[in-house]
Image (cartoon, rainbow, N blue to C red; front, side, top):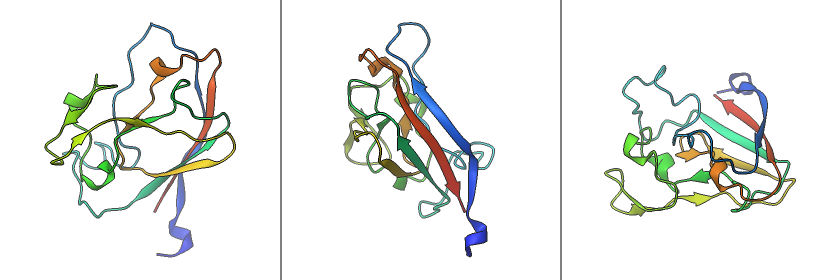
Length: 146
């Protein structure tokens, strides 16, 4: 398509992950817009359907001790939303019917300044329970779709 077909999915969002606190529930694993129930009621889509990317600008360094976003490698090719059984899994491995491989969550690690570009289909989650630093971790979330 032409450039006119590329648009922001939402205004940039300042995302702040404060230091760990025992209150609240850990966020669920998910895919980003437009891979949601409103567009895909069965939470499945053609594996080659590429509709959007996320571009996160690291205002602060992303480290394992300050809640760099957790993700499951290669899940952008699964053609489906993360299974509910994955919620509650933060550190262990997960045997999935999506892949013959055992999946192990990883965290994005990047210095302050650059951005992280990822496919909106990748399974990921914010992990505030991992921010054991004494400071907020900040990034700017951007979403672009076609």
